[in-house]
Image (cartoon, rainbow, N blue to C red; front, top):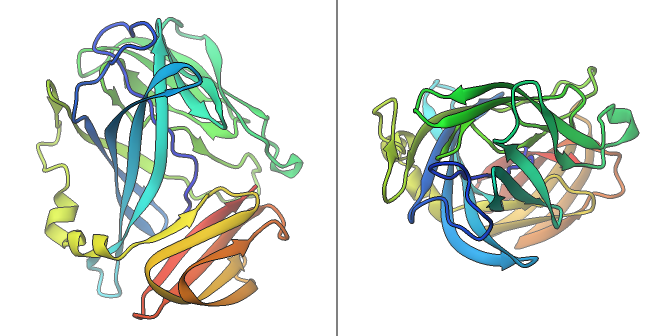
Length: 304
């Protein structure tokens, strides 16, 4: 599974307030269903308190990926529970900023009007990737969305290495508002994620348009038992070492290109190991991880 950039931003109940303010209540939790080629699941985002970064009072959020797949009988089965990263954000006036590569970037600007554009991040794409090193998004509409809050609709530029597209209100978000890394090369088949909002809840607001339990798949498929046996692989994307950690002993890892060519096999016999990726060409790879209990994990790795 591709652990592409997952960034979060949170909004104020009204016009975003000044820096150092708090714009969500305690116990805020978001659930987003997702689908991509080969698996599906939901992303759970939880507010984890405040901290100070570069002199700014920022909010800390924790992302967790609950993944599922279909077995040979077509049944839904747990694929795993994976830490999907941390995210830090703060607001200033009508603009929300997020931390990217040790610098704060503008993410959503509610002061803009339809047709305006602004930069949402900086990347270092390969010259062969045909992406701009600066990622921009354009406002396609402003107004009030279906939840009754002031909102903006944005769309990523075609040559943006980071993708942000959707409609976002300034109370709790709405559409999936984490910029995702993508390829701009038309010859590359990019396995994009398709996200849909399921529900949001904090101490003063509950939004659940479907009326279905937020963690329906978790409670009905029995993924709670799988949470006790997880594998962490990261950072992803990476430009160097890839760390692999498990709560059980691993026996072997294998790395393949998207064309199915095996480029490395590494015996492990430990609960953790390091895979050196810098010797390979940039691009997408598939990592297979085998553990002593017969577990088999597959992840798509982005090398930049």
